[in-house]
Length: 141
Image (tube, rainbow, N blue to C red):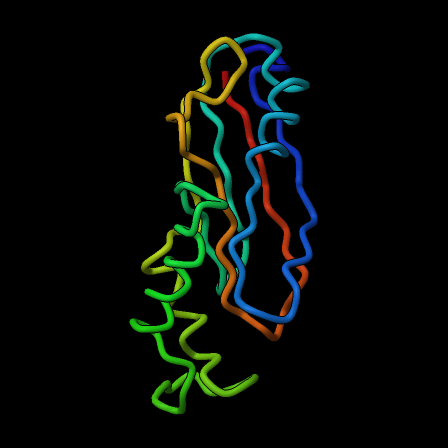
């Protein structure tokens, strides 16, 4: 395997003080322009946090807000959680990665993400206590 077959980069993202779905598609495409050089391969998107995940969904047309609504219904921010440090309901944030995995691996064809027409790569963060996130992008090709 050549030295440029594996490339990696860490994004620093600020998600704010509320629940959020942040579209990372443009950042992924910019990384692939530098890292893939027109090659086929795989892009892995990984969030090294215990309270965030990566989702592939339509962003900006209401699906991102719908996802947060579903997560609120499934994981209410109340006092039912055994994991109790942080703000009220923070324990639910630690359950989130079981439902929204902290990673996604996506095909890259000719140096570009092979997403469907309405698909976006998104960071999902329900943790109001930690607005600073890292997202590792890794290309193997």
